[in-house]
Length: 140
Picture 1 (cartoon, rainbow, N blue to C red):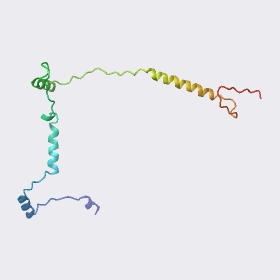
Picture 2 (cartoon, one colour; picture 1 turned 120 degrees about the vertical axis):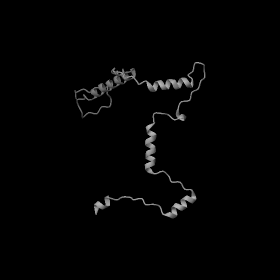
Picture 3 (cartoon, rainbow, N blue to C red; picture 1 turned 135 degrees about the vertical axis):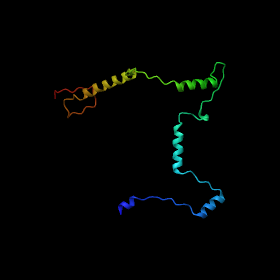
């Protein structure tokens, strides 16, 4: 029974005659099916290289030396025919140099580390001292 549940299929039957007549009288037009829409999408993707007229750049000539529409089309055709040249050169990236702000930050960090190392060198941990400058004598 589980195999029969998985093998569900849809069979499209013809429309009843009275529906066909009503659609003809009303002038109903069938909407495209899913398969037809998929086919249209595949056809549209095939000429994705060409721009529709409304998406092409508009040519505006302001001065006498500006590119005219005919010249722009000529340049566009040359660009389409001429393939891009591949370069065999390796690209090297340089490590950015540290700025002075970064140097100041590293100096401040090193000063903080020195202060914390000094405060950790306390010999007698039972004494509380809130003043860093006062040194304790062991002459008790």
